[in-house]
Length: 411
Length: 121
Image (cartoon, rainbow over all chains, first blue to last red; front, top):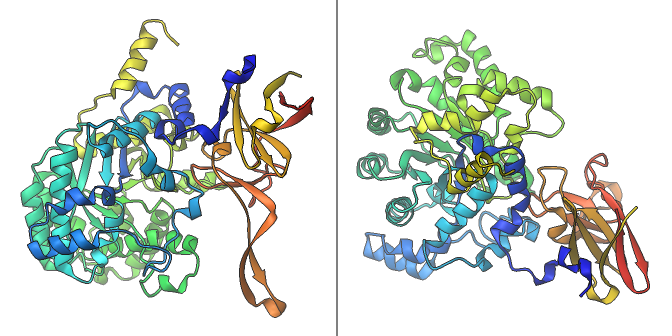
C-alpha cells in the first residue's frame, strides 16, 4: 500500500450505512452550527412493512390477522395497480440498500435508523409517519383499513414511541370509518409521543361530513393538531391519465391536499373549530399561494357559497401550518420569497425532510435562504413545530456534545 | 498543481469508483470503458455524495415519423453519474446536469503514468 492510499476509499468494498450516505449532511450541520438551536422535522418516514410481522400480531380480528400473515403488505411490483417506480430504478441507493444496513440488537431497528439520519441532518426531534400505509385508505375493504390502523398505531406506541423520546408521531386516522376515527383519538390521544393525528389525503371521504365533527371536537379539546398528509394514487381517474411518475407525483401530492383544503374552507371548519390547528403535509409550498389567490377572488363574488367564513379564505390559510418539503427551489427564488411572505412562513411553516424518501430536503434548504433572518430560520427549522406540538426543546446528545466541545475551546 | 495518487491501474475495475480525500475536498474517480473521470464528490443540488451512487445511461424516448412514440431505450454512449440523494443526473463525459448545462460538477484531470492513476488538484 502506498502512503496516500489511506485517503482512498474503494466503494465496492463498503457496506451500506446511513451515516456514510449522509456524511455530507453532517458537514453541513457542523458548518451551520445547528447545535445552537432546536430542530424539528415534522414529516419523516419509516418502512413499517419491514416490521409487518410485529404489527400483524396487533390485529384484533383473527380472520384479518391470518390473512395479513399470509398476504403481507407491500407496494407491489411494476405490474401492481399503482404501477409505481417511485424509487427511480435504483438511482436512489437507500431504497435497495436500506435492508442491508447493520444495526445493533437493541433498540428497535427503526429507532436506530431514525436516530442515525436525524443525527446526520442535525434534527433533534422528528414526527415519524409510515410509508405504504399512506395509501391504506384506498383499500376497498374498510375493515382492513380499520384493523391495520389499530395494529400500526398500537405497535408504534408500544415499540417505538414509548422508548424513543426524540421520535413523535401523528397517528393514522382510519378516515373511511368516522366512528373509528373518534375512537382512535380517545384510545391513543394520551399515549407518549402522540402529538396529533393524521389523515392520509388519498381517500374519497368528505371531511365536512357531520360524522367527523366529534373527532375534530375531541382533537380541539386535547389541543392536538390534525394533519393532512398528501399522497398520490395512480388509479385515481384523472391521475390515471399520466404515464410517467413525475406527473403523477407532482400533481397527486398537491391535488390531494387541495381538495381537502377547499372543502375544509368552504364548509367553514376554521370557524366551527377555531382552536383546532391543521398541518398540511408534503405538498410543497407553491400550491398555497395559488389557492389563496384563487379562493379570495371567488369568495368575493360568492360569499353565499361559504357563509360561515367571516374573513377571506387566505386569512384562514395564513393561520394554518404547512410542512416545507418538497420545497420548489429551482430557478424561482423570487417566487419562493413571495410564497414565504404569503403563508406567513416565519410563524406557520415547519421544516420537514421526508427522509428517507427520494425527494427529501435537508435543513440547509431553509437555513441557506438569504431572504430569511436568523429568527425566521430558527422558527421554521424548529420553533414553529415546538409551539405547534408543545414539544420540550431538548437538543440531541450529538448536538449537546458538539456544543460542549465548542464551549471548551474545540472547533 | 499537486498530483494525488489514487491507485494502480488494475486496482479500479471497470465501472468502479474510488473516492479520495484531498484536504477538505473529496474527489470521486470513476473508471468506465478504460477511461478515467474525476469529479468533486459533492452534488450542486443539496450537497449529496454524487460519485457514490449508480451510473446509468441516458434514457431516450424513441419518436418515429410523424411524432409517433415508439418506446424507450438506453443510450449506452451517454453514461450518467446519478447522485444517490435525489437522483440528479450528470453526463459522465463533462459533469453537466442532463437538464441544465449550467449546473455542473467540478471536474479534475486524471493522469495515467507508469501504470498508476493520479488526480491533478
